[in-house]
Length: 260
Image (tube, rainbow, N blue to C red; front, side, top):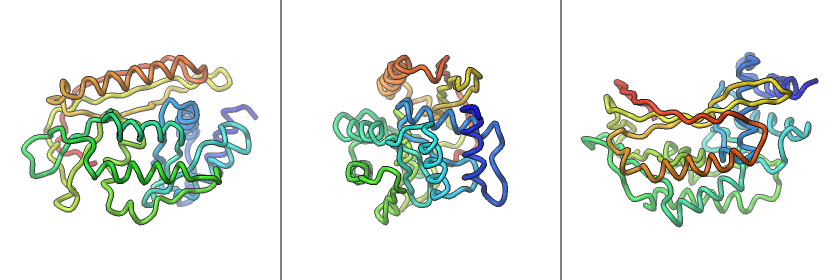
């Protein structure tokens, strides 16, 4: 079997939900994403292709590792039932930057605000999950084990934490004790995407590596975060040969409502 066929077979075998398997296109997209995590082009992948649970995501990752399609350094993280495939070195480096140099801009989007605003990136709401995740990843000895974050995560703002884990230069925060709604409705957002072509077996499959947004009114305030993120991604990209043709694009969108 070719590399692509092995990736597809593993996905369709391990990640079925409600008796429905992933399509070939979905399986190839997932393969490209996992390869990007393995290469350190993105620190983690949040699995949301269907209703497969974190245990199934771990079975998929173990299958890829046994076939030597990805390294055994990758881990599966269960965060409140959400399955993530993580590169522990890349994730830890991101979290360390958050704690020490505020490399991630945090946008307060509480529903009670008239408009989004930049908030302190080192606030306790970020420091606590960052330190707990660093401790969890640093103490992992069974690399094939499914790691559970634990009860502490029940109080975390998952929108913010996912932004940290996925390597976004900007992440949203809101006070979930106040409301789970936000103030982004009909707010112009700058949507940023990074895409590349996965060339396993010589065939090309275009996939999206990153997709996040920044309130357009805060573009200047977040410019340095965005530029540093772009520079780091470009530097890592030229050091590998699995993915090609990196493209980073941005556009302005305005939505009647935004679900975080």
